[in-house]
Image (cartoon, rainbow, N blue to C red; front, side):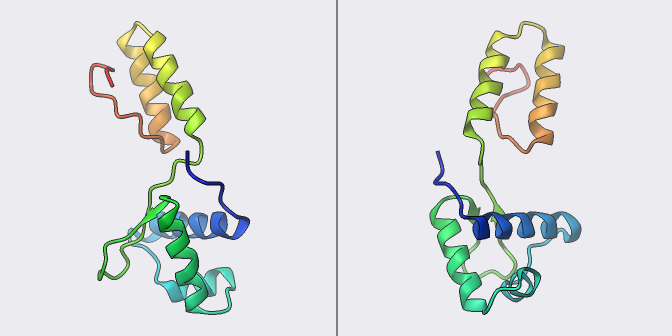
Length: 116
């Protein structure tokens, strides 16, 4: 279970996620700084390093605009989905639940037969 995020860290994650969705590439540290009204690029870098340490962000070393959100803030939701899938018998129900998990951004690691 990832550590709880601070309010500012959650804002940074949300900013990066929204930027990625709108632009199909991640924001620069300067864009994050301006977008969130932070005091400096080094403040952004410190937050990014902490988020990488918590396992909710990753980046390719030496590559520009390579931030990727990897967080699972709701592991209990993933557990609930997995328990529900285990109880389902009909392939259509499993597929519906998989679609819902995808919409929520949850990675259930389920193959096409519904087996984890």
